[in-house]
Length: 69
Image (cartoon, rainbow, N blue to C red; front, side):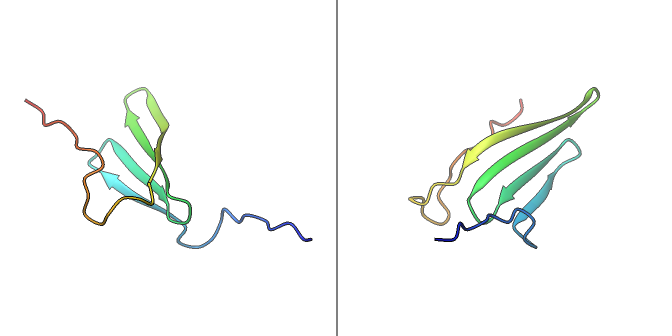
């Protein structure tokens, strides 16, 4: 039995979306993991934010950012 290798460099697998001037949302389109890369004055922080659940329905709100006052 041959072991299947995971390819992390597949074209289009990882998508990045800029969030204003201070962050980037990164998603693995194959396995659903996502990260937030926050950029500040002292450098950057890459934070694992979770995994998209397969039991969600299209358009369902997963998380809502509180509005600034």
